[in-house]
Length: 143
Image (cartoon, rainbow, N blue to C red; front, side, top):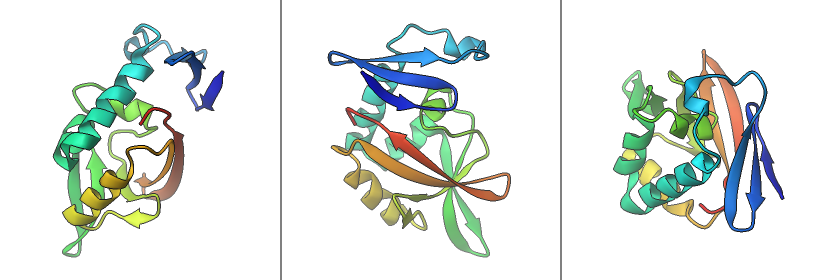
């Protein structure tokens, strides 16, 4: 069953397993893993959500960003496992400013929004990419 269509891949559900089909032109070595990479990434992200925001930030290699003394979000750096940010549609350098409309202006707001994610199957990120605000809507069954 078709689960989600993304810019670089299509996510399918086969029984209780997720499969990722990479779209043509995605010849990068990090896309050459077996078909269950999407499922493994979702499970690792779900586990991190239950462990706490520090674990999620470590997976995404995200650090707080402040402007004029106020936190505006979290900048994404190239993580050890790039598939985590790829799965979320993020790129190194993106600043995640909101999750589901909630501004990420403090550690408490991050903790609050991450605690609300387990059990949901869709969420929306607002990111600043190259100075322009963009919204990324994600279907994440199994989260």
